[in-house]
Image 1 (spheres, rainbow, N blue to C red):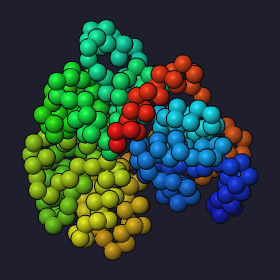
Image 2 (cartoon, rainbow, N blue to C red):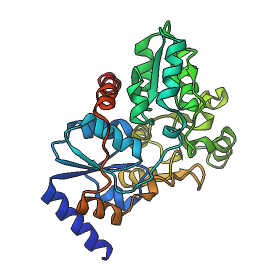
Image 3 (tube, one colour):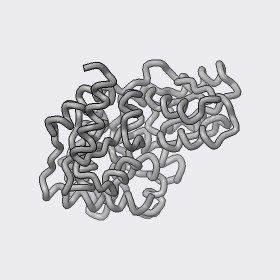
Image 4 (spheres, one colour):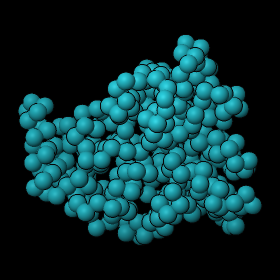
Length: 308
């Protein structure tokens, strides 16, 4: 089918089956334009929990669809592309957390939302990059905290709070390439631009970058909000390329420069219009989680949603 015919078929199936399409900012532009809601991990988790649809088609990586299935266990959650993995989610297991708990029975585990359902089930508090700072400060400096799995976000949080959380050695393979030198080189080329950086980036624990007057650290949604509210006309964007689409849609009179042309999440790009159509048509690639894991994981996710 031609592109417009596929889109029409998707819209018809969505109405017929009372489905909602949720898409992450890192998916392709045509997926974002078709979605009912486009957001970051926190926004998508909230939408999944609140939707009245019978079917959620989650255009993102697998852990995100799992989170939707945990927050809405009575709904059918479909993922349009199989093998949409995440280097962060794949870097740690529930067994790793159980071992830490055995050695630190009084400690608390805070897991970034970029984790599997099994890991969330062993976690005390979940967080996203949007509310990680609020979650950590809510727990207090006197607590022994194990932060998983993103070492870069963890380093950023330790710097911002003065805490000394133990960090798991995981990273986002996309943001890990965003170095301090890369940011500083771009600033030399565009000295008047604000530099908007996702805290998963490799440079997030660097004092030189943190103290730089032009740098601002945000979740993807925070980056978009800053650009929209700022009087500036030029921005260097240090996160995944797909974010540029929403930035340009909402701010057609502003210029957005990607920090490097290769900051692209290959897993997110596996979601296609054809895959979305087939997921809805056949109701395939359903994300199903063991009820016991769902029950345990709901506690850490609900705490995340309550705090921020």
